[in-house]
Image (cartoon, rainbow, N blue to C red; front, side):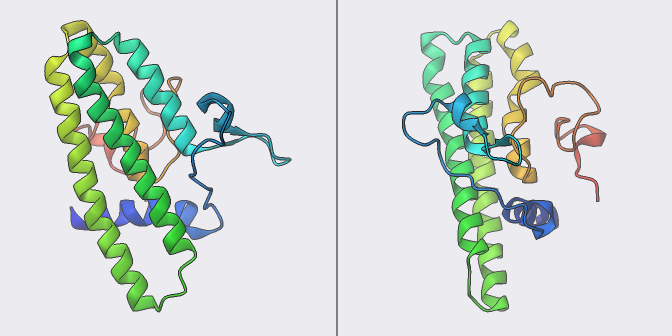
Length: 186
């Protein structure tokens, strides 16, 4: 389990194996909506901003769930913990990506980041379970398909997926954790 956590942290810190795939995860520039900020119209084609994409996916799921007023507190806790987790990933990626520390110190930083990530994942899971308990059967059907999909790409160091990536057999990490296909492939 610890090895999987460290692997997930390393992938999140250096997606693409550290071969230059370290895209920025900063928030949307002011004055731009999350969908607009999710796409960067650079010459190399549109690049997805993972933080903006996560914000859009959270908003989409909130809309699809059709939450009732008594469910909003639990929803807000879940969404906020997801956002904090994504922000922590961005902060750690920036810190480690520009680190001029010695290799042993960098290893200590990665280890500390992994421990913090595990705690953050547990916080998201706890908030998600509390929300799920408040959902109606119809809302639970939506949550069963989409709730964990907001978290899994963050854990795997992948860009967050939009609603169109809901089919079976998709990218690694899309299956719920208890499915046989849920583990990342090497």
